[in-house]
Image 1 (cartoon, rainbow, N blue to C red):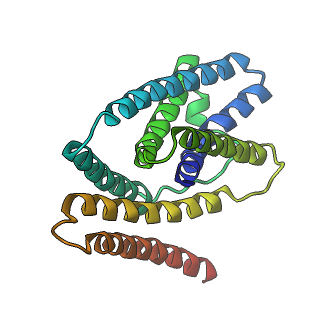
Image 2 (image 1 turned 30 degrees about the horizontal axis):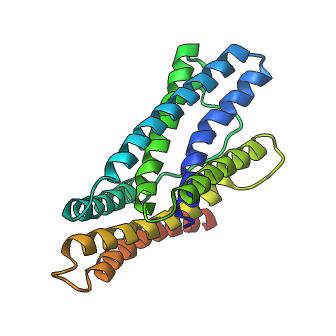
Length: 232
């Protein structure tokens, strides 16, 4: 039940680490037109992602029988692959800076608007794919948890931006990544069980272990190297 909240919290941090420092910077320098462009682009990106998400949800709800099972199985495997790429192999890690990227600041109003729109659209659509796996849960609960996660992410980044909190966003993001790996392992196991469970009874556990053990080993190994280098 809490998966949508944690997923949207993680994706929301990715969004607001780009958006909020920009808005704070523009307002501080009285560049209010740039702020409006950020808000407009973000709103359009969020609206487009919401529309596409609604279409995806409405279409998947029509699936039943073998088609529904095939979709659920393939979706689980795709999401597991997405987690493996973005969290384990690509190693997304968020560092915090009050100053926004200079390349973003130097863009025109249209450019800043596009950056904001693409950021919202990409991350919200990614979150939608994960939330699809919660189709068995009440839509109201899923929606409420998702909104709460995004609101929490905005609040955390805003408080740190304003200096009200010294929360380590990198640590929060790292913990959420560990959770996401566990979720990816579950998705892979579940997807394999849907597709091949009738042939291999223990495929769910096998899939989870094959996914989780190497993924955690890769992350822990890299982090140990970083820690040891700092100690030396």
